[in-house]
Length: 273
Ligand SMILES: Cc1ncc(COP(=O)(O)O)c(C=O)c1O
Image (tube, rainbow, N blue to C red):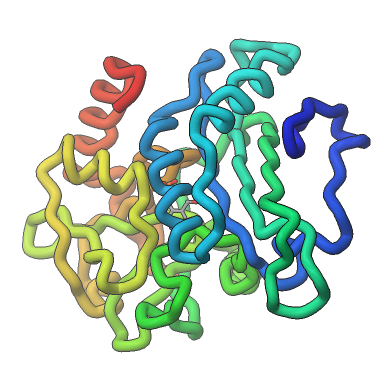
């Protein structure tokens, strides 16, 4: 069952207008939330980020009470409450004229779920030839304009990897297509600052709060000399990387193992971190 604009519908009936502004011009924002035993993990943080993403696009402020209720009702309608799920909230500019001007019909709200896909225990990543534009209007925004990520992820898959990593326009390490990056630098655990244009990942923030890690910018070439790398995202948690551009890495190395342990302990202990 999928929530569309206030109604819970079967997947086949869950449709939006062909004139929706999220569709052709990418005028929308979204969140992906992990659901464990029926409970969305860190939902408050995801809703906060949806609000800030919507603000950047000058979309009307999302009604968070209504959104929480939509999430609850969508989850309550799932056949197996114990199944691990990914839940996606999409919030677009709504039905609009052709072109970049937004219409005044009001936003489209969609809440959809799918089973959480089990990933391999470690990932290979490749760096991509296209930069993240840390000075662009959408820097750090979880918008539905994600085609850069689609292209980069396909590039990684063609090379046998499961994630692609971007530099920013100045050559600093930035992020993956759907993940943040942590790496060892001089024995410390480091992740790029938000100045690189990376998304302020919910998982990244929790790792920074719970583990001994710092925000620091490094050239993307730091991936060639580091001893360990991991990715973070709502569906990966802390996910070890076993190779970068074909060069093997310890996976998980000591810093990654510690972060995985601390993350699992804290995440299990808190319902709303
Ligand atoms: C571009 C990008 N960076 C980072 C992340 C990780 O963010 P989070 O930990 O909030 O899932 C995502 C999530 O999908 C993403 O799309």
